[in-house]
Length: 343
Image (cartoon, rainbow, N blue to C red):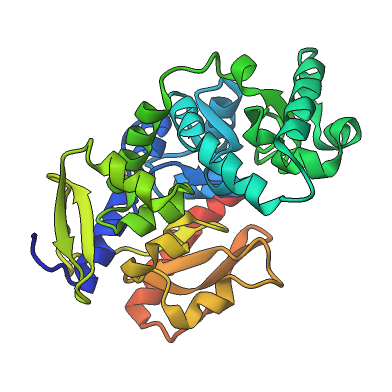
């Protein structure tokens, strides 16, 4: 059994692994692999999430990488849109497909069946052979109810220019095998890579936290961990945490510079709750039913301290707590750089 990690160590370690303590100098596809992909239900989140984590990011560069198929946007984990490197797309898709399909059929019991979805997938595959289709066109072809789950039977990607800064609605679908290339690897290999990516980007963590993020059963995660070289720690509450052997643990006193995160950033979601990046007293101010897109937030001293928005070439801030003069100066200096990027 490894040593007990403090809450401060877990906070700084997750920030470091998410590249929020020090920006990455790697190519953006490699940056995405290090941070375990990027959730992108709102297209600008791709750009802002990468800008906060990688050095010298330009909007045109991100769009070009999407167009050149170096980074791929598709529905992957938990049936939500993610952006990953081209090399990670098929391992991730294969890793989660069957379990997601079982979960969906259980939820749809009495409404949609496996046979119905298989037939819909065949119909859509034939139609996509002539090129990408818009969401509305797919709805007319197979029905909106089937379209919402069709990605579990037919691997689809969002094809640019949709899902970019310039055209934010990710509503143009293409066959993944046409856009990315044919599937490579096995389900087992994909699951091993997926869990490794999680621990690289978010560890140490519990098995349940890994499963929640990936949308896989805990039993599957437990089996996959046996294929990896891991170590175990304890949280202050006694919970066992697993990590890749040799994974860095960062001192809890390490300075955490101000950072800006986009809507639905994965560092704020429930699987990362243990890190304290989103204080629980603020959670309902970020995620609630009246704000399905959530809110972009800023971090001060490693935790959410408010929300931000871009207005007329500058940033407006809604502070959740009183900031010191030094904290505000550092935040606004970083905010000026983001405003330049945004405008």
